[in-house]
Length: 87
Picture 1 (cartoon, rainbow, N blue to C red):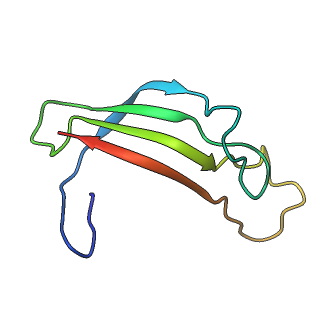
Picture 2: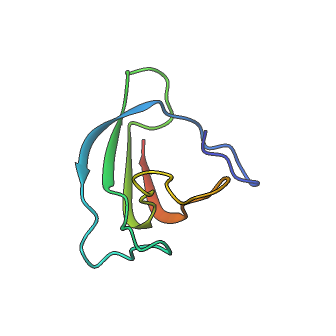
């Protein structure tokens, strides 16, 4: 669901159609492990979804450690991205 305090913009169930590594110049994030890939997602069916495609671009951070060695308790991996929705 794409909801904000102002409006409910609908939903989409989607699959990854394409993936591209974030540019080398992308912000690596606080843990310096890198940025998650850019994605193109497409609706899984021709159902009544509000959107047909979603793009995740301009990512910064988001890559988790390969394992939890040396990490105690819970942890978070922060990231930011732009999401573009197309009907």
